[in-house]
Structure formats: C-alpha cells, structure tokens
Length: 105
Image 1: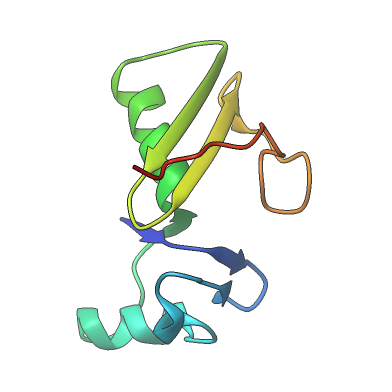
Image 2 (image 1 turned 120 degrees about the vertical axis):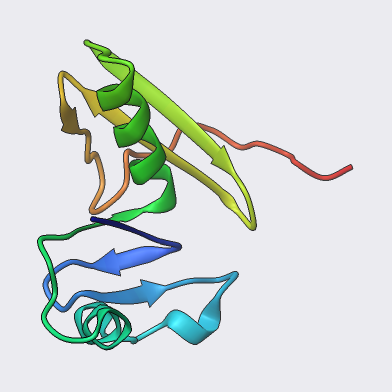
C-alpha cells in the first residue's frame, strides 16, 4: 500500500512537518490515521511524498533503469529523483534544489 503525503514528512514520527497547501495535515499521526481508516492494524505501508510516489510508480511499472527526474504539479510543485532504484536525497528529505520555476499565468 502506498500513501502520498504533501509537504515535508517526519519519517521518525510519521507525521507531516510542513504542508503549505494542506495545513490541516501538519502534525497528524499518519499511522494512527491509516489504522482508523482501515479498521485496525496498519498493513505493510510505504509513506512517500506525492512526487516520490509518482516517480516510484513510473520507475517500477515502466521497468526503467538509471536516473529518473520526476516533476509534479498540483497544489504545489514537487520533485523526486530516483537513481539506480533508490531515492536521491541531497538535502534532508529532498532531492535538492533544481532551480526556480515560475508557474504563474
């Protein structure tokens, strides 16, 4: 099972530390939330950002190799990099800064 979480995830506490576009999720215990939603114990789960989940799906389902850069546009702009099957983390929980993008009309 996969769960997409917007914002910055505190992996140790399984909570969202920052969700600018969905502030109601900040500090919510994701394991407890999932347990209640699924009616009991938490199944084997991988909690990822929406960008990382999209990148992982593309990488696995299309049987890709090497490096994949995935840019997501939704309520915000996200990115993930998979390098030889593993997520690239340059700074904390992010793939690093890749430049400014103006998405205004």
